Length: 150
Image (cartoon, rainbow, N blue to C red; front, side):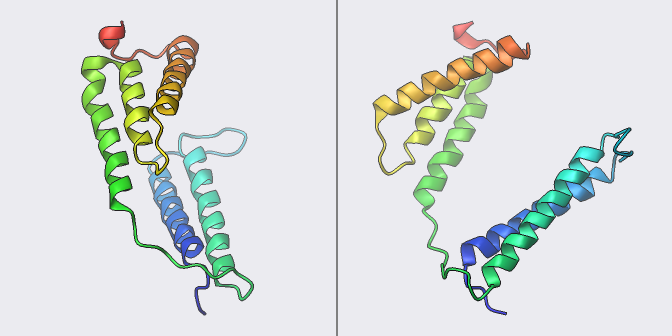
């Protein structure tokens, strides 16, 4: 067996690993039945779906008809910017509040793109702020640190 499409194969392995983690985590809770679901039912079902999807993806990557593709060297700059943006979000959340922190997260993460345009990043950041406010604060009634936007 040879791996013809390395990105698909390793994505499949990652899916199988995540599915196993969900499935094993679900064993801590009662599973129940389809008509009377327990707390572990959905994670177990999600784990099973991820395992099946990952196995199918990895199998397809090994078939003779699979398109040849290899894994490129990771772009550590991009990974560092995205990880840094998430860390900055976590640090800013208690002080600045959820809306400002979401804007910062989106704006800083946008810098990871090779075609970064600050005007687009500002518009997307404002759109995400509106989305978070509408869905999570107004729609679901979740309580987040308000920060200086109150």
